[in-house]
Length: 269
Image (cartoon, rainbow, N blue to C red):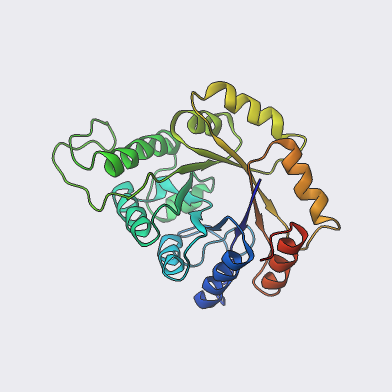
């Protein structure tokens, strides 16, 4: 099972250099992936509920420039809030900076007010997310028109840069719609809000409906380390998780908690 870190970006007081430094240390410690959250204009203050003070894709580009091995991703980017043509180009550019190390994690979003704040309709966001994922695949592989789609179709156009390697798509969520989207369009799944004993049933449903291998993961919040992190990690491994992403609370003390998790899991290099 691969261990991953969700980087802290919940306070306007965070220096971006701190986030970059934590990503570099996560690579040194042997974590598999670092993730960044995303919110454009939430209705409340940034904090544990609304992460993503800094623009996630720009931050990943900065992290790409100072790392060489660790995988870089979003957990999660609210795709229907954004222009998918721009997202395709941003992510492909990051992949050129970090060949083979980028994963795009997406979700449909849940906060209706945030959609209203940026002038995007909330209704139909699930279907638009699926259409946007189809568009991303087309741009990254075919690289030109035509693309037949009611929402994002176009006849003539050239897309560059195309990635040097396939960019995996991760879909987060546990709803029936999210699981269907994973099975149809994604390469990886990230569960949120499940316990280890709930994970196998969701994973079984997903595997039964997918026609190809899907990486199965979960995301946890540990603002304070549990009494026995090793037992928690083992429980998720036994439940069948391929990947385990952990958010370790606010930036103060984050480095110490991350190093403790690495040591507990036997990652420390």
